[in-house]
Image (cartoon, rainbow, N blue to C red):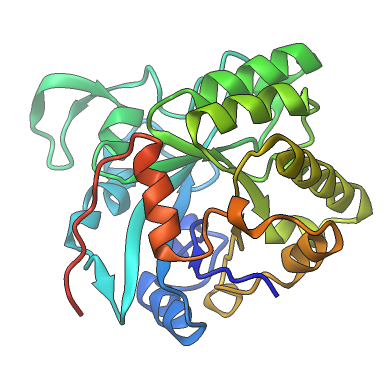
Length: 271
C-alpha cells in the first residue's frame, strides 16, 4: 500500500461547483491522517461572471489570514488556473487591473494573473474549456504544456491524463523531470471511463521509466473526498510504481522537492 500523506489539489466552495469550506477540508485532511493539504480553487471564467473585476478574486488575495498549521495539518495556498491558448497563456495574463477592491487606483498596474497569484504558494495549470485550443496539433500541444510548466509559478499540470489534448508524453515528462516538477496523477480521472484511466496509466508508466516524479491528488470538490486515493493507488500497484518517485508520500518529501523546484521556503507555525 502506497503511503500518500499530502493532498495538493483540492477545492472549496469558492470553486462554485464544490461544496465545502476550507475549514471542513482541513478537518477532513486531519481525520484522514494527512500531513499537508493544498487548497487550489479554480482561477478561471468558470467561477465568476465578471472576469475583469479584481473584486471577484478576493478569496485568493486574502489567504494570508489562513493559518499555516491548522488542526495539525500544514496548509498551502494555491489555485488551479486555466490554460487558455496554444502559446500557454494562463487565465488573467495580459488583463490589466487598474483599481483595487475599494476602487483606489494602483500606483503600478498589474495584470489579473499577477495580482491574484502573487501571494499564493504555487499554481496548478489545467485545460478545461477548449475553445481557445481548437485545431491544436500534437506538437503544438506539447510545446504549450512545456511553456506552461517552465513558468516558475507553476508547480504541476492538472490532470493531463484527462485533458482531452494529445501531446508527446516523453518530451513533456523529460522537461518536468529536469525542472524537478511532478506530473499529476489525478484521482478524479479514474471515474471518467476506461480510456482516461488507460491514458493516466500510460503516463505513470513512462514517469517510472524516465525517472519523473508524480504527485497523487484527489481534485476533491467536497471534504469527504479529501485524502482518498483508491483508484490511483490501485493503478500504481498494478504497474509497481516506484514509491521514491511519488512526491507527496510525506510533507517532508513534498516540501523538499517543492523547494528544489525553486519555490520559496514556507514557515509553518507550531500547532
